[in-house]
Image 1 (tube, rainbow, N blue to C red):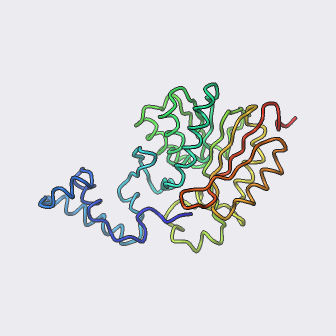
Image 2: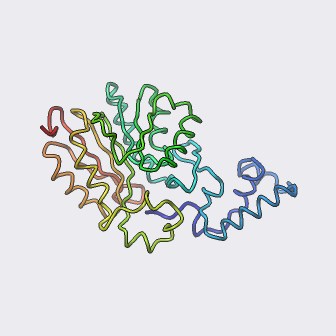
Image 3: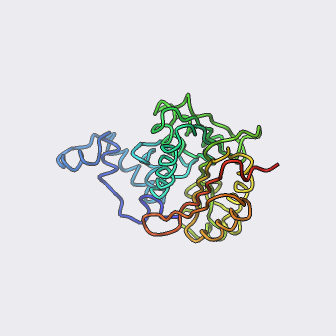
Length: 274
């Protein structure tokens, strides 16, 4: 898990000034002479206090950018991180080559940033977005409404996949992947939802369960994209090899050169369980 956005950096007064003024940071930089009203000054001081107490900047702001869109975030959802944009890039490229593949599921949707980014770019894509947290799904619904994709994104509160046994062309997931003991030693612990971070003893507990379900849930020729922790590449590949006897498997690296994404590309007519 990479650094929490804003954590470890100096308190960004310009960002917070823009927040209380309702202006972008560039406007604040261009207007150094601006005076705050007493109410705005009070809001700024309250925000600085929250930051000083360790609350991540995106939660203080109440929103965060992902894939060029501005998403509402609350302490009920994981803060969107730039490395997850790789998953969206690859999913969009795949969908662009497969105009007939227009059903997808985003497992563990959180704020909905992955599902909504995909739906905003592919106008006839229909998605199911799942999460164990009903509070997270409420945030995701509001984000879907903001970007006018609520009619194409169905939200389901469940463990991994809906129980009715649907089949999808594309599975995308940014699941909890931090080993439990590692997570408890990280600054992120207690600041973002543990449900979205804790991947069990080896960090692959939830990923392992989804990979086991995937053959039954992918349409012939479908693809799964799973974000992983940078040290889990070979272990995740091994899990996929054990489950998929006829599939093309690939590890994608992020801009830092670290393993970040497991791709499972199935072949038509193969790997469906009987």
